[in-house]
Image 1 (cartoon, rainbow, N blue to C red):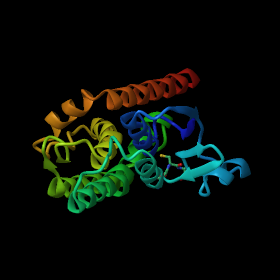
Image 2 (tube, rainbow, N blue to C red):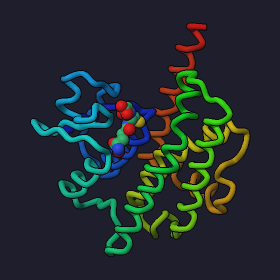
Image 3 (tube, helix red, strand yellow):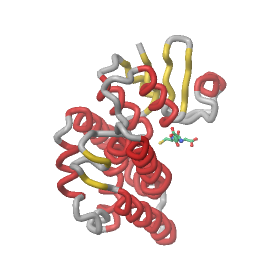
Length: 218
Ligand SMILES: N[C@@H](CCC(=O)N[C@@H](CS)C(=O)NCC(=O)O)C(=O)O
């Protein structure tokens, strides 16, 4: 059985989890923090989460794991049929991973762990989110999924990052998704998908647990 190491708060872990659920692959989630211990570095060379264990084979980097899954379980494909569609789906996933999600990290750390978030950091992180979402808006062709009529890499990246955008918006006191006219309907569509709903619920629970733990400390 595939073991997925990581945390429900990590968008990269959630990408992989949603893919596993979408493909109906048997897997076990193993809660694990990012770490620089030799044991973790042997499985994840940067010490980051997620990483997976597939028998004796270890693999890190969410996109490499997705591609492995796509090769190993090509039915229930998470990529569109055409080369252009596949490339667009991958491109959109990168917009979420590299820009929108990265901008959200500071807000999530602030919420979950009480990490400091001063005005300069907020402004910089907000700008990255806004720019990334504008890029998503330029590329997306809702049909009703981001690249046509089937749920693909682009959507599982969106499903992993958009809850963080909502959280960042709550902290900033604004709806960061407002420029995307389709965002509300799209979020409803995602919420209705079992694989996404399960992942969002686990994320919410993990956030609440952390907040309870930190309020217990104060
Ligand atoms: N490019 C990596 C990013 C993974 C990543 O940055 N994970 C975070 C948790 S969300 C982490 O492990 N951070 C700890 C670190 O950077 O050392 C992927 O797609 O898997």
